[in-house]
Length: 338
Image 1 (spheres, helix red, strand yellow):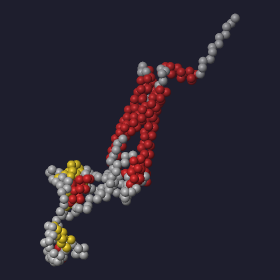
Image 2 (cartoon, rainbow, N blue to C red; image 1 turned 90 degrees about the vertical axis):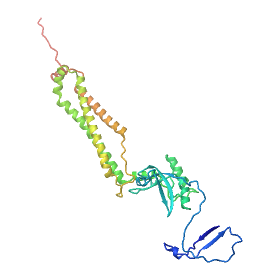
Image 3 (cartoon, rainbow, N blue to C red; image 1 turned 180 degrees about the vertical axis):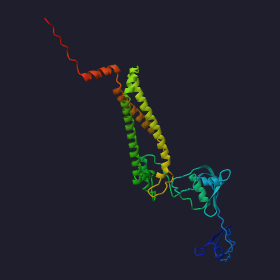
Image 4 (cartoon, rainbow, N blue to C red; image 1 turned 90 degrees about the horizontal axis):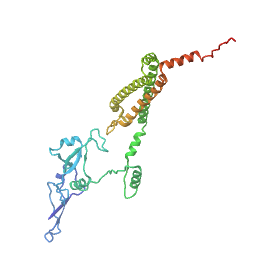
């Protein structure tokens, strides 16, 4: 025998409806010939709900889940905890990993549960019949052509999506933000200006050293130091200065990157982005820039040093300088008496 009690829509609602509910419709099955068509008045003093379900494939299944840290801390020693759905429905879960952030959850301290879709939908429909309808779908579109094709397909029947948002659209919106553009260009101009000034300072310092130390270098050459050694000494000194400047610049830049990122992370609305910005260090481009600066400055100083300390020795240069000052020698004329 199965009894189904249906409460009429006009019956009272609220926490006290059990006391006010007096009449209902009762249907009996399996009692053919034992009952008549005479109505029977029933007096109901308590209300209890019992849902009869067929066996499900998820009976006894504990669904693995990736949860937020606070939910993981509330789990049992074996990582199991119950997910309460609705009033009294429970879905058993087991924590297999934790995560700090998940897409589309933008709360400051997010709480979330990530589970396999198919078993969770079945378990949710079992716990709360009629629920478990997905309201959001994620699709992988790694290329631009794939993104265009997926977007066009979602606009056609049988799909009826109210909104389609691509990650590329979000990135483009943030990239084209005027505040972001101004900050990026200000940092680029400042970095390029500092790079140009540092290169100019190294070359100017090398030129000044070559000019001011000409006397000392001449004495060293007079003592037997070859011009090539003098040139390499000038190049090596400038190269070490460039290396020290590059290391100092990288150190200061890294410190400022980690310190200032939190201050620059505010959006145009004055809110902190979620998930937060992550510092990405392009190590290879940074190394190439430093190596290019050191190589370029060293090459420029090598050219200047070669012009100052050529292949000619000190005596040969002095002789050439003396000839340039006195001018070309005049032919000596002798008079012979016959």
